[in-house]
Length: 375
Image 1: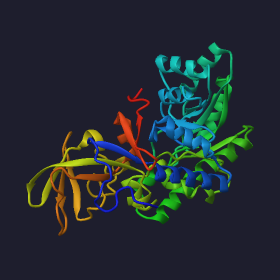
Image 2: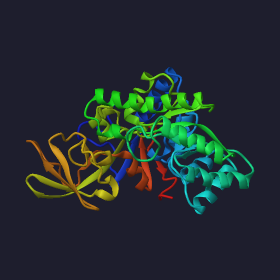
Image 3: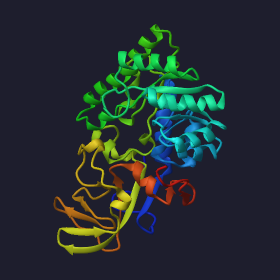
Image 4: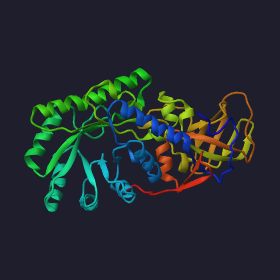
């Protein structure tokens, strides 16, 4: 695949900081994951929080995605405005404001709602009663991240039985999990083992629920690092990767892909050369974030990969500045020169961007942000 930034040369001079997507790499990543899903007969329900862009959602549907995973009702509403209407809300909902928003979404979309407690199910039961309809839910299983979810096996079965008894208007559509602990893996073999644990947590629990009279249609796993191993445990029927559309420095650090697969970069301009071993760029934590590895695990040095500058490291960020130091012999970039950076974590970069520049098409394209904010 062609490089976005050949060596140290950037073909377009941007007003920086600039978020840049290489369209051809983006498309390749989307097609590659779609091919994997099709080969193993998985439904592909990508997590939209990775990009929040209708243009990318459209490409995902065109290449076989069956629907979308959303962290927020607002993400589903944004996609609904662009004629997508099949969602898994992989995030527990609570409180009257969220129930009101969910009620509005249910008017127009097919929605499966994540749940991991009787209390949460009771809120959904109340809404289902008011609407005089059945609401589909998926039980979240904790496959080792220890965030949300019940433990695999009997604990999830007990919850399912309680919901069946107390919430007659809820249908348990299936099970889902997210093995976020994969981001702490130190080898490909460890990723493989975490993926197998992830899959077994829902496959084995689904078998237990089926043996107790439940009809389980959905057996869903979700993580870009573990997606490539989802076929190792028979029974999984859906995958929910998100970051794969771009990949980033953390994925490179995990060994998921080489850096040439990364479709998103941040372009910065050198604004100062205050020392023989240091330059400063006009891009800081407000753009790149402060991630050095998900869930507190440091996988990479610095705050991104500087394309074409292997002897430099982006060591420090303040809000509007980035400090780059020399880690080996080599030249420093000049003031006014632009540098492309693969961010450690691509998803928050898109979350904060007002627009993205898209290269690799016949002419330069700009995609405005479809949504910002956390609600």
